[in-house]
Length: 173
Image (cartoon, rainbow, N blue to C red):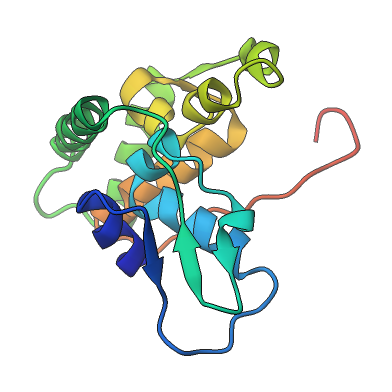
């Protein structure tokens, strides 16, 4: 995922991964890793698991925002991340840092109940509004937006973590 983030930050639209044994879920796994490593990537590109070609090991994406808008998103992400990190105190242990970041995100968060209204009409708006970037910078999102945003914050604070996601057919789970 680091190679993809580097290429994204350089304004590129594809990267070839090194030789390796890539499974059928690599594209999906890569998407989760990218959102946890660089929330802006999921907010301003059209990447999904179909943009990974196992045969050529190529990851590709298109930008859904202008270069100026991408720069603004990156700048806002940097400022927002710094703001969250400023809540940490020197000498805090891992548990204290995790709780401080969790509370800061939870206190600023609002669930976006209306996001499903744009799903069919504007996939780029849906992707942006459900991104971990939106949870961090716009304080709005859905379940996985906040899970990936928290994973990003924990990683930035040097805490080991992984966002675990799944689906449920049962209401309330």
